[in-house]
Picture 1 (cartoon, rainbow, N blue to C red):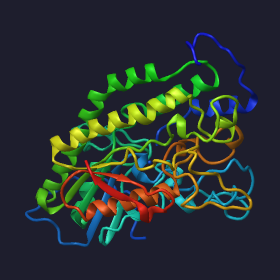
Picture 2 (picture 1 turned 90 degrees about the horizontal axis):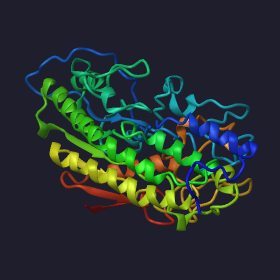
Picture 3 (picture 1 turned 135 degrees about the vertical axis):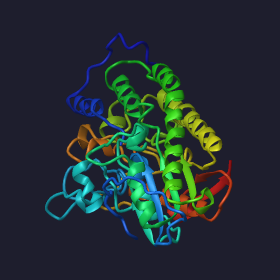
Picture 4 (picture 1 turned 90 degrees about the vertical axis):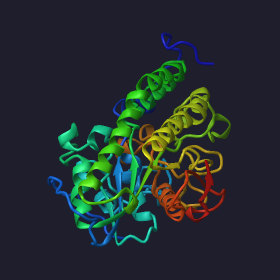
Length: 400
């Protein structure tokens, strides 16, 4: 079993070193009208909510921007369309803008299957303001400490423009993961698997515990900023719904891992280089802890809560219930993984590293279905889960 990290007990082969190099740089990133982020304009107080086209709007980070929507499952293949999994394949090269549009160059990675587009809420306009890698300060208004990000104004300031030009009916927010340092946690755990014969979960738990109060305060302020923008645009709180959602676990419990803990297939083929103990901690301790904290913020701030912590159960990277596509059996919503594996090792020439550990094409459709189901329930907090062996149509809600 892993011991302390001060002792190096096995060498890292060349492919393992490439995966480690990728992990060290890992950032946590995230049918209708998808609009580019509007330029900032100062809020103008109105006497009544606008009567323009109805709109559903998403704000926040990579888990709602549509990060990893490029991929249909995962394949360690190194040529062509990677056994049908790479939607950016043109037939001769790769063009991520086929999936992320103009935001492929900025890195905001708003995909064509992002939650707001995959959901069916009846809105005439579906507007994605989220940006991969965003923290809570990137949501706040500039006048209240908000920070621009990747060349775009703070998201609340963008929302101000959207709120005046549309009749916003639904705002969905995913934020806080980058404030907690998800990317640091993943990088540490990968290093501990590939180099140090040690677990990461003790130090990672301390990091989460230390950062959680400040991160949740930031989430609460983000909600306050959204409310203030909407009020300035003439909306009463009853004119629209505000949903705060949590994060799913991209990796399974150790008992549900498809590859053994020993050897290198877990890293170089599966793209899930985590010790069993760390996988169990992430799946059953970290993700539920963060979801519970976010639920508390939603309750305090009067937002509806959508719990996604179990959404990928049985569909995670390396899950025994899934398999990678092959040259003879292509990707499928019923058999492929619904989250992107860690790019590195044999997979180091595939997509952008920031896509790693996010819901992929199938996962984005599933989250969209969760939001569709929640839209039909105007009150109450719910958890969203999938039905084994079914595609996104098998998603269902349970009361929290």
